[in-house]
Image (cartoon, rainbow, N blue to C red; front, side):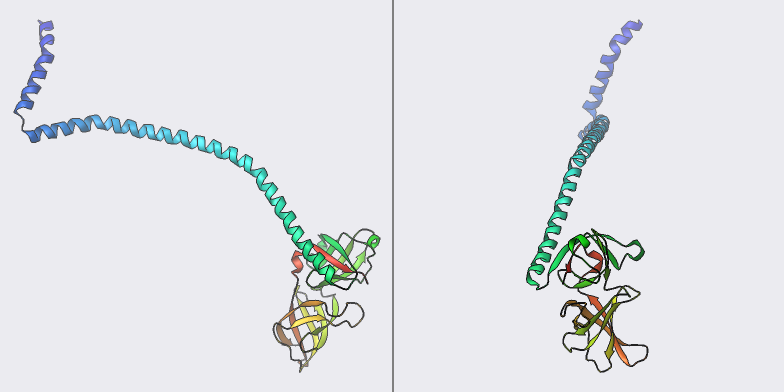
Amino acid sequence: MIRFKKKFLVPSVVSILIIILFFLQPAAILSLKKGLADVFLLPLKLTHSIFNEIKLIVSYRKLYRENLFLNKEIAPLHQQLSAYEEVFRENERLNRLLSFKSKTTFSTKAAQVIGRDPSNWLSILIINKGKRDGLENGMPVISDVSLVGKIIEVSKDSSRVLLINDPNFKAAALIQDSRDEGIVSGSIGGSCKMYFLSLDTDVKDNDIVVTSGLGDVFPKGLLIGRVIDVDLDSTGLMKNCSIKPATNLSRLEEVLVILN
């Protein structure tokens, strides 16, 4: 009897569903279909979403490994490019220096900056030329643009150069336009100043300052820099002016030493 009931249970349920669907209104059928579709679509959407997430994770891991590989490949190329850039910049600087050397009437020796004095980092350079190359104390040192200092100590293969921004540096100079003379020296703050200008000196901002040639230390006409400020000294009887050097003294890498 139980087997008989189970045998006819499924057909009965199907028949009842068919009868219900037959008597239902079209709108109700559509609603039922939509409900059934939603029931079946939910796991499909869920499965699709999970599949997409897994696909993204796999893709991310793949891209991450490729990125690591490319970084390893690119690193040496960056180093080579940086080295080539340094060589290119050095060639540019040397070309400017050689061009300046070919135009000057002085006998000069090119030298490379190999260090700075730890006790006076901003004002003393060490260059790779010395007594063996004919260098002596007091020789002027210039860049491809202007006067930068003088030699104060010479060893066999190197020399120390005192820059114009040091308070111990002194050079006779003049204002190029007005021809007024004074002394250029460094200051405690690491800048340059021109002292002992007469009170009636017609000096103004942007005036060019050059060596005057007095004292037989520096040749006449070497560019030093431009005036950026004018003031009175402490007595009020003379003018001083601040000077911006024509060469950036903190970026010197090659220089010329005037030999005679």
